[in-house]
Image (cartoon, rainbow, N blue to C red; front, top):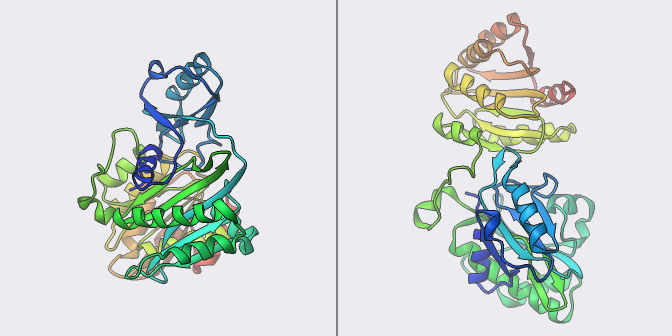
Length: 365
């Protein structure tokens, strides 16, 4: 479960991480007098809000009311804005990044620090790998003070910023551990005349641990209609930012397919896992969800037939007959029959995963 920014910021503040002074509004009339420039941040569970027009600035109350009205009247990547976080605009001197993520390979959380704040961490890793410090954390011994100090020192911090970054790293880990998190991120953590300050907050809690956490699983308009529909159909669905829809059976296969599409220059539009034993109805439901998303240019179904029967998946594709260019790769139970059915219906069928990924990317407009 991805928390909203204001919820994540509350957690950070509870653990002693310095956050910007802010308050939450649900209507423009709730805006207080503006003594300093402010930022208005729509509270929706999507990334890249700024690029989508979800973050605006104001110099006085009249302008703030106008900007808040604008935000409440728009959708941010398909989501209605129910809440806006109002915060003082920080006097930024330098931007850093600090975050924790679960390392699936090492089976433990990993702390990440870099001086390249304000950028997507994946982009930093690709363009400036030498500027990133990473440290896997043993959950039995936890993060020690000297370990956090060493990390901050390794990215070139000095003085108060060195000690401040180390302390924030430790506090962030404590919050991460206590709340069964999968991701905790401050990007950017900024240097101001008054010290380090978290001006953004990201916090994702493991869905399997929600029963022992205090946050409600859903709020009416904070998930997309696609996500609601996927939950109704018992399909695993995650919205992404690209234009190639990805459908598979099994989370590992879907993730590998995402990587393959990205390798050929494509951007996945979604993660959609049919699960084991999927049939024609499940397939039609998946394609229905994809049709609800704007900006899809092609669809790639990568199917492994174990307990899933490929001919049933093929029947679902044929019955739904998606309008977007559709590529299908099948392997396993009843694959020959499934391929025959699809070819007779003029769908593009491939044998290899990478072959299918390349074709799906090439078929975009």
